[in-house]
Length: 402
Image (cartoon, rainbow, N blue to C red; front, side, top):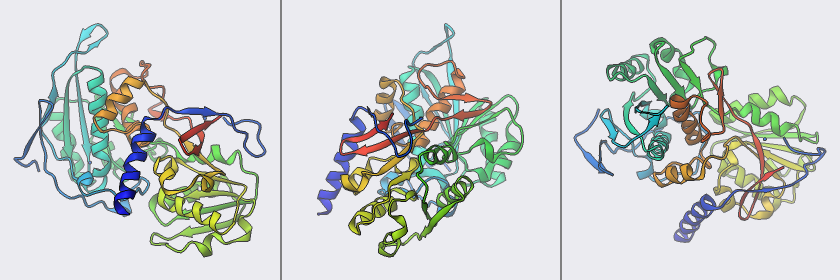
């Protein structure tokens, strides 16, 4: 049975990852149309590039994990990427008609975001490979977000003369980063929104998606009688606060505990019938709730979810009928297909992983500002502007609602 589930999961990722996105027209209730991570001596040869890395199990501190909880992954997938060596690829790139070397540093705290750092590095490598770039990629692990370690990490980058940096830190590190970043640097922060920073620093570029904007987009299509389930987690609490600021009139508000297994008492509530139900929960909890709602014949009029549910695992964990009333907000835009293929080949996922997509927006902006047609998403006033779009799910993938 386990092998069958594993095979099904692999098949689903391969299938949905390769399925061309389609567009479908759908009228939502009461609206006429919808608006849009100490270097060891172990060396690995990879495509002619020597990468020094130490493979160690990751200990992710959940309390500081600002990204949505995900399906449990294997230990190999959670191995750390340790390197303070210079990774170089000798190919050609022309910028403004002149051959140039793209130098970029990638800094991350392994105790917090190693799970996402590997994919972000794969995305950067895929982008540079697509550009046929002569580049230096300098990877630094700060281990954590202490002021001393952050200062040390940026000092190493400055010693190399690198001024363009992608820093995979959480908002907790903002004050320390602000102190160490100099005016000649450009530092892109994929996990942080500009609204989390109360000072001015033109060297910092904020790249996180906005769950606020996604919830706002979804709220336009509420039919009233609002209900909301949220998770006992960092992101769940963040979404709850945003939801409460947008939709104060809520008839049902329920917290889903981390180890919650029995959903009968949660979904078997007459007030959910014909309600506008917001699921601010991770992909697993969302799937369980959707299944249990149908199992107990409880049918909200419409069910909303944010970027968390924009994951092909949703189709594996639920049945078609469970998702009939579900509308999902997604801020990942379409990019050049050859670029997407290059990144996918190297292990990045800019179709469904928003951190990968944000990293792509960042590496492109660091070298071309907004003067590139590869990435439609733009940076305005040091902040990435994402346009949420709405999707429904079918047995073949996600379809945009127009």
